[in-house]
Length: 272
Image (tube, rainbow, N blue to C red):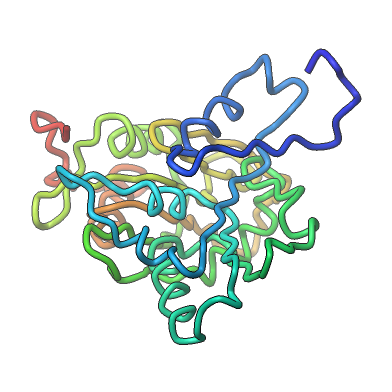
């Protein structure tokens, strides 16, 4: 960055085994770096021929394999070498990717040929993404487990105003304390969090972003219309997620019309 003005864009390629969340977090939260650069988005390239095999790979001790984690964190998933597989196999791969990440955009290509306008200037981690996110969140489905040890996408919406302090508590219990469990008493593990929320006494929509333990709340340029009922829309990508428990917990913990519903918080049983 000492060569200021000499770069239009920085594309950082990690190794095939890397956790992109750890690398992305460094650029997202480092204030010194953030003066000159910002995190634009995460792109994952999936090999058409071997992608499904990698996604199905089982790791010891129930760990999430690297390929699934990379797909879960992606804003863009590029399926490459589509000419090397049948349409049936390609369809299975698409289904597997979409079941893991219902929010990311899928591009299909051969020989890695991609229009740069599709992968640059994504603004996936700043307030500008709120404009496109508003439309996208209305069409993101909750996915069903497709693979063993599945990562899935869960989405819900709740009308009304959220209390900012309580919203922080809700997110921190999920990402930091890791003490929220599903009906089978399995710990919910959130890899990526994204959403638009209505904070009490704030006229503009607030975007929520989370990667692993890091999260951020930022006002977008979008104002709530006076004649439109405010709606909170959230998307979680992770493992052992239960849509209804998350929704009820959000209502009980965060919303103005508070009613206590804390049976799913296990404060003395923090997940490993």
